[in-house]
Image (cartoon, rainbow, N blue to C red; front, side, top):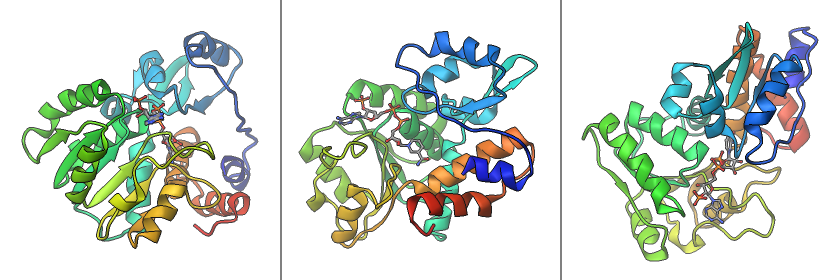
Length: 265
Ligand SMILES: NC(=O)c1ccc[n+]([C@@H]2O[C@H](COP(=O)([O-])OP(=O)(O)OC[C@H]3O[C@@H](n4cnc5c(N)ncnc54)[C@H](OP(=O)(O)O)[C@@H]3O)[C@@H](O)[C@H]2O)c1
């Protein structure tokens, strides 16, 4: 997707993957800078650590307290977060009339869940419920969001247990899934299929060549559901625009993504 975009702009550039183990990012970043990289995307589990290592934060990074896009400018590490922007564009593409957002439940308060929750605290929704396997993480996020939301809409945390999640889902219009459950083929669904009932809509930030198991299950229950492939496209296009200093050739990126996934975004 990125290489197709650079080729479209006739710019010689390479986008490649480097795997950095958890806990090694701090050591790796100076080596990436020394190696002369112009920038990079940073993905799980490093986005929050990358925020800490960033020297100049764009407002998007400050809002998300997370960095997924880096550019090296005069030797300094500049950081952005394009996750919420990509999610927002993907949501408008999937459901053009979905704004204002209804009662929203975010399942998973890691890097992506936190970015979307902070974005919603900014743009508003009818209500926001946070659920995370480790309740301390959801509580910390809740405490950070409370002054930002400033009583404009109800904000709550619900514990990761079946009856609490099922009840919360029965009072939810939009479920945003942001855990890593579903990345491995033998992962269980993050919630029971039976808890998803129309008119609940499901946005799974995970993506796969075939729609994710959560999306498949939600659709089988008659719910509108989308996976995160369009979010991948749009957050990537926003990153590209930062590096290229011009709008990304979205059609070329979309075509490349469709080609490798066999999907029709
Ligand atoms: N479509 C896109 O463009 C896009 C962009 C970004 C991310 N994503 C997707 O979003 C997902 C999360 O990424 P991230 O950056 O937020 O990762 P992260 O910061 O590492 O957070 C992982 C989240 O998953 C939860 N989790 C992990 N294992 C779990 C389990 N066995 N049961 C329940 N919860 C579990 C964690 O809960 P604990 O706090 O309890 O560990 C945490 O909430 C990934 O699958 C990624 O592919 C998609």
